[in-house]
Length: 81
Image (cartoon, rainbow, N blue to C red; front, side, top):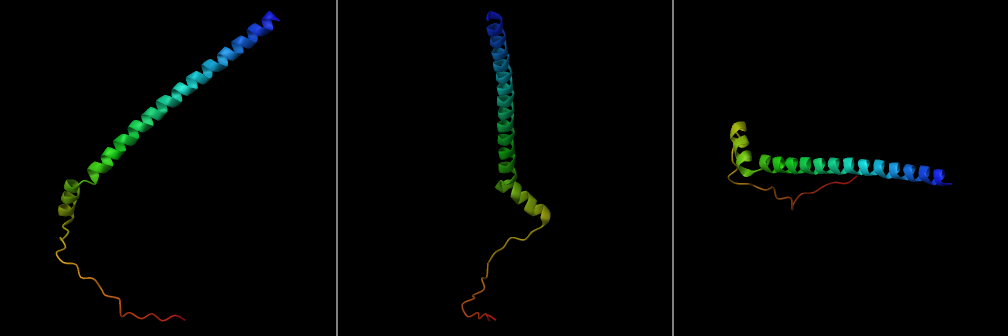
């Protein structure tokens, strides 16, 4: 009886140790993913910043829009068949 109890104790302890190790690995992975996500968010913010966009517009030789004319569609007619 004592031997069986000892074996069961060792099995239980081993199982807890394995699960603790796996949990630790998952926590490390979650922390790494959080850090990677933060880095990507910062990179996204810097790439979409006004200064960066202005430089890219100059490189593409785009023209600034001065006046926008909208098309009025109040008198438009559509035929349905």
